[in-house]
Amino acid sequence: MRFGKAFIPTQKEAPKDALLPSHIFLVRGAFINQVASGIYNFLPLGKKVLEKIENIIKNELDNAGCQEVQLGFVTPCELWEKSGRLAKYGKELLRFKDRRENCFVLGPTHEEMMVELVKNRANSYKDLPLNLYQINLKFRDEARPRFGLLRGREFIMKDGYSFHADHEDMVREFKLMEETYRKIFEKMGLDFRVVEAHSGAIGGSGSKEFMVLANSGEDTIVVCDSCGYAANIEAAKRAQPEAPCEPPEAEFCKFFTPGVKTIGELSDFFKVNPYYLVKAVAKKAIYDDHEEIVVFFLRGSDELQETKALSAIGANDLVDVSEEELENAGLVPGYIGPFETEVRVLFDSSLKNAANMICGANEKEYHMVGADLGNIEAEFADIIEVKEGDKCPGCGGKLLLTKGIEVGHIFQLGTRYSEPLEANFLDENGKSKPFVMGTYGIGVSRLIAAIIEQNHDEKGCIWPKSVAPFEVDIVVSNIKDEEQKNFAEELYDRLRSASVEVILDDRNERFGFKMKDFELIGFPYAVIVGKSLKEGKIEIVDRKTLEKTEVEKDKVFEYLTDILK
Image (cartoon, rainbow, N blue to C red; front, top):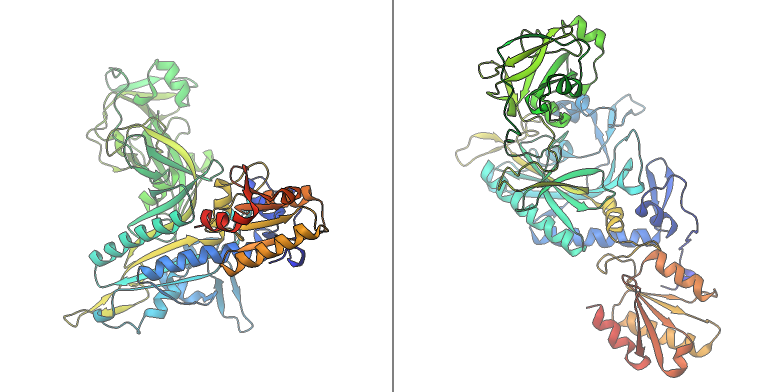
């Protein structure tokens, strides 16, 4: 490719709404351009990177025995109704009707469609296991699209689905996909972690996320400083915390606490560590067919993790509740306690058998002291958010918080979709059973941004060789100099013949302008054909370090092919 004929309209200015390096440099470097909020076109350079990422994914999936298909972008609402997701998915699911009033959705994910594809086509246990995938366009109507490709409405995703005769074989495939995904992201040169995760709207019994470590990441990751434990904050666990001090001893009774409502005020009033206070968090839980007020109780030293809480009660959403609604439910705002309540309550696991606690008395300006939760009959679940410094549930090491960008997610679905969609097979005894499934996703277009979030400097992108749009940029310092031009043309032809992906910057532009484009776009290497050619020297610039190496002009070809191996 010659720069002079290529469509690479680089820009000096960043988009006004661009905050992250990947958004800024991908637009300025002519990889993408915005069409509408959260919707982007891919220019030639962006398309080349996209295809390289797709090829790495396809090669590893093919090696793992997966087969590629192509599903329709538009899915009938009927399938989503059968699976129970049409109402649960929320406003991010874009619904529309055709001219015949038939309801459709733009698929953000394709579990229903893939089940329908396999249903009545894989009829016997002899047809299993089966792992089918696609790399296709998706749409999720994000409320606040932002950060360029990291949170768009339209995006390209690899989604795969496996079908099995039993749970054990599904777990085997799940582990195979985890290992395959590791290989994929390693080939892209990414620093990532595999973390335990929450299954969310996809469902299933277990899931893992693949997180690219980056300060700009929206996800908080919990990692252990002593072992391999890692989890998304939404699913992270901790060891049972140790008491920070001796408990306050008091007879169980009601205590007058005028104007004391918050945990901080209560801690100051009694001169007690928040560990021995019971915090009440009231929320309105939204279900398919009803809503209810739920009070979550946890230690005063902890915070509620809403995703965990949502999962624990099986609701679709948790929303704030007004003081008037609390009062109508017989609760006293600021003084809610775990005794004698008429609403649903859920306790954090760390409160099981807790004694010598201080909690609300369900009476204005009163709290209970000396409360013993050991004999209370209630639901218990892990609903707290892990904090930095908590102890690892595996080894007892220190838990740390870092940031990451989710680029992959794998799920153990079980029969979550096969049962409602009546997708069955005949086992070896001739008995009809639902498929046991797994699902495996990779954010393909999101990976482009994630790679740059981890590989950039103040000048622009720094592409790893495996996904760079071109490996080598030959920069002719003075295109009017026949010696420079001829040498560059000869080297360009030799590299192309050797299957090196090379672009020749033959534009009649200033040298500084060309080098700024090289730095902005981020090709791995620049070959500078300039004044030193008269002394038989060529300069090679490593984009990652910006270090310059002088090479004899007769050895440039061998030098480049060697470092590109």
